[in-house]
Image (cartoon, helix red, strand yellow):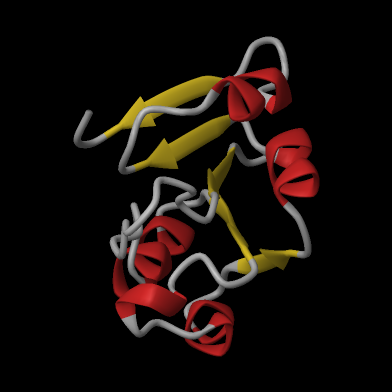
Length: 98
């Protein structure tokens, strides 16, 4: 079973970045990963859910669904306490800018 990389919507006020763009999501899929993106995660950066789907990613309807399905979480900002509570045991968090 492939490892699933989850890309949640950033919740920090004013944050417009997303941890993975559709082009990179597509490359990760080609490498054998499953990529799951929370609905609306790329909207503030002008990346639609449809662009992620076209790249091969699956769209999760909620943060809870995304975190439950992910082996690795890609985030731009440090997770909030609420997000930390959603990370399932054994998952890895990869943050890019803290």
